[in-house]
Length: 94
Image (tube, rainbow, N blue to C red; front, top):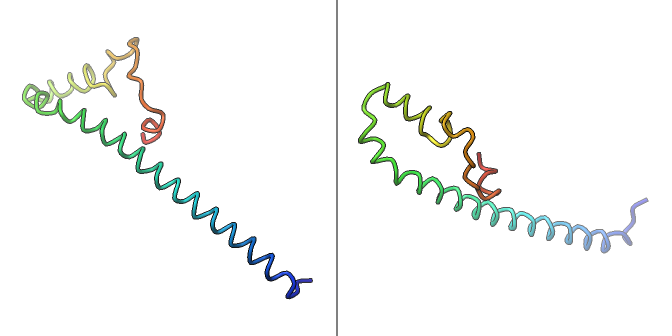
């Protein structure tokens, strides 16, 4: 049976649990920011190639050739090559 004698220990235990939950949430927010920054940096690096690619890809045939022949994510030519090593945190965003 619950009594008034349980209130203080229960209050302390719940306070500790809430503190731990808040700490975990803070850590997770920090990790998310770090991962997002890594992914953003990777995407910005890729975007630097966009002007050159868009200047030479003018037709559907050229687009098809680019996507399936050159693009790092889709090209069949990438098979058999050593893949780019990604930070596991960035990799988890895909």
